[in-house]
Image (cartoon, rainbow, N blue to C red; front, side, top):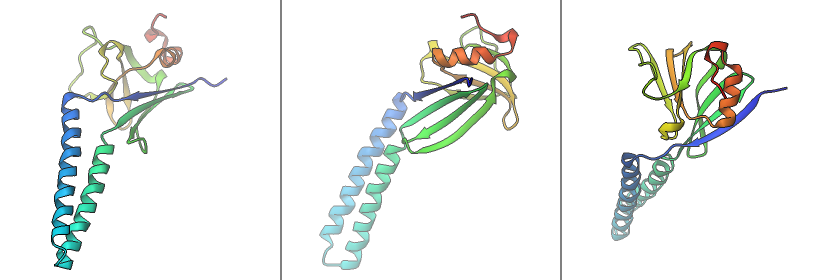
Length: 174
């Protein structure tokens, strides 16, 4: 029987993210309107008017594109001992971030003050929903990243599946 679970995490926006999103939207709208109005005011000069209206359309599309790309989600997929983490941008673009076999974890647990310090040669991958009490970490050797620490927020079902495939010395009590 296959051991499978999926979890979708929407990235919480920080204050800085919200400000970027606000300025992207309203700055883009303002630029688009200025270009469109200037294009209509220059109707007597067809080439300049045409160029300004094309720039207004490009600015509008660019604003929409940039604003939409601020929506980021992470998908955890656990299948028979393999944990895959993908980044989903604007609910349309999927980027594979990491694939690791849970049996290769060298350390695993709740991410808190007692968590061992990251070493200088360690690559830290933060994939969480900014809820500190639900974050876990996993240390492992990765072919691409080398010595790696993953910080993520698995739900109970995902945590149970991970726990079943952990090396015996790392299993957490349920």
